[in-house]
Length: 512
Image 1 (cartoon, one colour):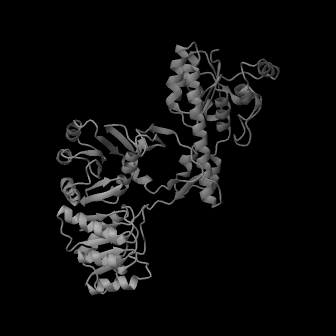
Image 2 (image 1 turned 90 degrees about the vertical axis):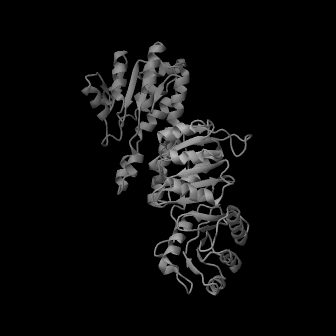
Image 3 (image 1 turned 180 degrees about the horizontal axis):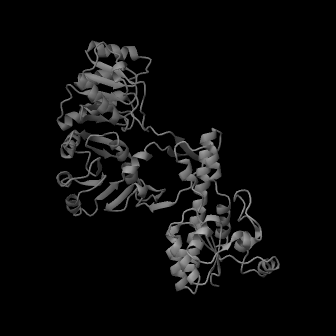
């Protein structure tokens, strides 16, 4: 059967005019509510108010208008069951074949600064989700549209399929409805739980963003959900894998620590070299690459400035898996295009607003949700946090700030040797902090870098003096760490005996 009657009620009216004109031209009767009906009339298109259709007025400032048997009966009754059709006729219920609804803008409302509880509550849509769910449940007979992007598809299918849509399209649109209503309810629950500080459950419902090339290993299937593609656009290269996505996220979080032109090189989410420069991205690259010329093989490179041809030329000399930048200059794109498997990822400026989003990790039987470690805590008033007899010099303080911003992105146990604008040695993920320190020293030696005059940063306290002593003997003259060990006095004493300066930030940055 062809579509005879459509019910339209939308908050977002983008794309609505061509849709209603198309429906009217095809002889489809239109039912509508409130502002949507007014908009349709302004186009000089015939429309029936829902209150006239149901014979029941809108009540309570519009809170009750579509919650009526003539609406939901028209959507839900089975056209292929004689008793359903008979009951509809006996109760004067006309079939509604097409539903076009989008919801009150709850998410946009609660995102506004200073939104009140009353404003949030009034933007919880009741009738809209109810109609969507009724229509989606009966998708065998009813076409339901929640996304304006699907309006042209519906009009095209009406022409191609004798005034109706295909079952495959109706099924796809119904799935989108349940994804949307689930996400909508989750947003409401999350906001109310947050603002009322009540104990509640945590739920996640996200659309499929893309199927991934594979998981940790080729035999593991993986999928990506949410809106990752809104922030990271792949310009070229192979499809992303699970580990690529993890690396991209780690790289983006690292590079947003810096305002100066900066380049980070990562492998398995760990920074293996970071450099910054006051003006020149190429100079920042050289500082990052010199930290470790082996680990970047097959790694990820990220920068916080448009990638220039000059930088692209030197990067092209090594095998790289992913390059991330806010923009790629035309000449750089042309050069890197020759490496067909190389993934170029354009990072949206708006991603910096998502870095503070909660961290969600799987756990046996469920999920863990954690506040993001979004800031390098402990750098404010650093001069007041000195615990040694000798205070750090101005150059050492600058190096401390640089190293501290990096060490929070290194897997614990983490040690970073650095100057004011470059890493010199990084030790990541060892079972003891002194081993991480020894690894960082060894990496610096392998790279031919001199640690004399450097600063060492530790993501967590030195539990014993041996880790600090190892760093100082390698050439570091100052250290920045959280403090908090029962042996802090021993560690401070070791620094004083060697004339080193040390700062306790009071905040650790474990990364697991």
